[in-house]
Length: 353
Image 1 (cartoon, rainbow, N blue to C red):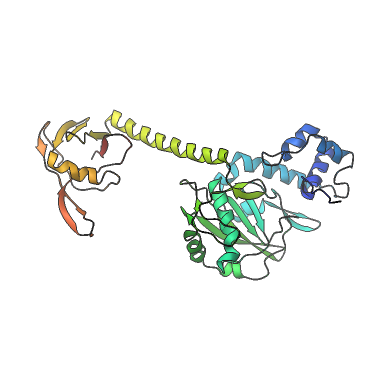
Image 2: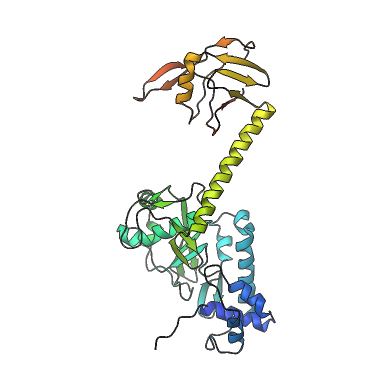
């Protein structure tokens, strides 16, 4: 008869036992370990208390419990990440604690941390698992990949050689650029713990998410898939998380548009009517020759600057000279306003000087 795998890791059971010794209530302990993607039965804590579940697991020390609680609090407040650079040594050291078995990662495998035993950037199939993990973290809130740590025990084993330290960050970026779009931003560092070196890769949350796989790589990465980091695993994104990413993008777009319209309302920007060529601003109005409007519409999705007369009489029709490259890259003279900003409305905004 097959033995059912535990829903709680040995490390979590050890911490739960330490919480029980500190007189934590069962529902309070349940709160720390009951996760959206891994629901724990309320009776599981009672089973631990009665030594019917994880009886052979040694209880964590009170110092280990204190470190876990501090890391748990920091990871959810976000203040720890904002206060120091993500690869600052003091910041990284707070994520580890020394046990009788050696150094261990305090948070465990969460939705912002993932552990891997080894590191290879080539051949690409050996790097596919990392590519998948990077995409998942970038699509969530960013986070860390730790190399040289076992995901079962969370103990630091160390890397067998200096491949991670010698790998050029540009090589990592090239591999990511050829596999994911948009490309996540990563930074790397090494950390020495009791003579054992681990590699650390920090992945930034991508503002342009969703990050999508561009091609198949072995069995780990499938073309067109959006990966997402959940607690303890990286997998294809679920509808709820994808909807949240899309909603976040829409909110940022609305906020940017609202900011632009607020500048128009206060007179910091002027508005251009693309049908009539009339420009209205706080300091006055003027009209751009209709023959130039087609050029303005051509650059509607970008912006650039050319010189503008400082004083224009109201309702006076003027030609504002600038230059832009044509489709062959040759620069030619054309009539354009100083700066045209893209918006989702029918009007464009012109930055005032």
